[in-house]
Length: 187
Image (cartoon, rainbow, N blue to C red; front, side):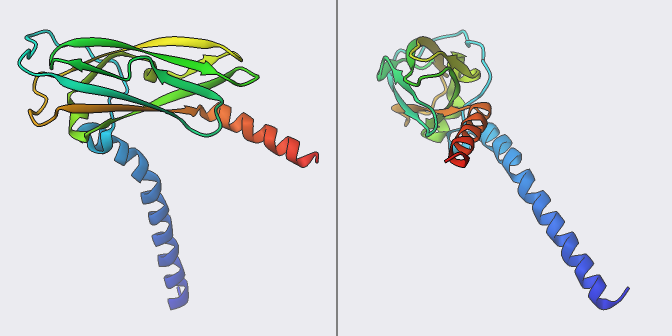
């Protein structure tokens, strides 16, 4: 092998390794965030209520923020904007989904928790965020979120913000892009 061929082979090998590393970063980052609670990543599976004493000596305010990402004609609203709970106490709030579009569509709510250290202490027992939702045109749907802040939530945390951003599912995004391309191509 000539020196030029060796250089090309080493460069191609380095390129393949960089692409592989880049592809692996997303799942590794998600695992890291789920373990550490970094970046406010909340658990994506239901967890059981922890029985035990409720810390009635303090209250924590839990705020709910909702947003809708582009490409989905829905509105997500927290029916309770904020609640005060004792750590260790289970609490239920409700959210309303409305499809303002002219066709049925699917969406998924992606949660984040602030401050990020609180995500390690938030237990979601039931949550609409565990699965995608499908709404007919004009349909309104109310769904619960049952949660519990663990008793060992740090004393310096007085407010926890739980934000949900509503996104179209990958299937919906793909079909919207195909429709847009079809309509744009016919003009």
